[in-house]
Length: 180
Image 1 (tube, rainbow, N blue to C red):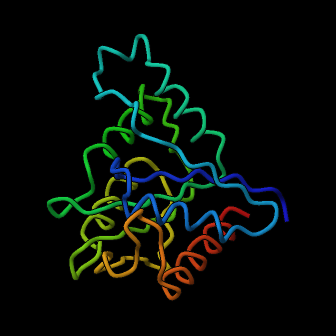
Image 2 (image 1 turned 30 degrees about the horizontal axis):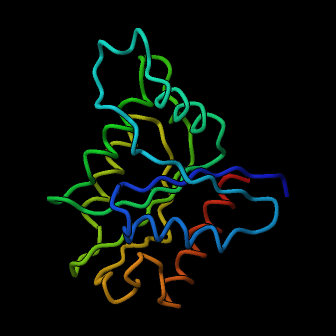
Image 3 (image 1 turned 45 degrees about the vertical axis):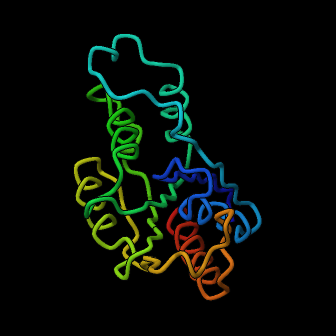
């Protein structure tokens, strides 16, 4: 097997976020020769096309890490039936300027945790719509939409549920296989 480089992005900025906890849990499931770098969206400014003439350093770093990754692992909460603005903002920045889409032809796995009964189904399906325009290739299976997250994570946002840990592992392995 060749060496595979993955990057992980959480759509939540909250310190003890369940979705950041999912990305951390994915680190524990990596097979040999696979790395996962967790990327932060905390310092990404709001997208403004005027700034494309002089891209912010944080955005250039994010674009570079995405371009150099074999695959992307995204963990997203669901806000108002969609994914959060912080994630949309990063997606927009990294698809710009026109003709320099860092997301192009990337394999991507999506997961998410929410307090509600539907997990993050609507956010994930909405992300898939955006991925079509970006020429990204989301995995169809397994789907990982964690409902009632407060029962599966501790107060620090660490995943404690063994069945969910197994599902995270299955998703990571599917992404690795897609990138091989």
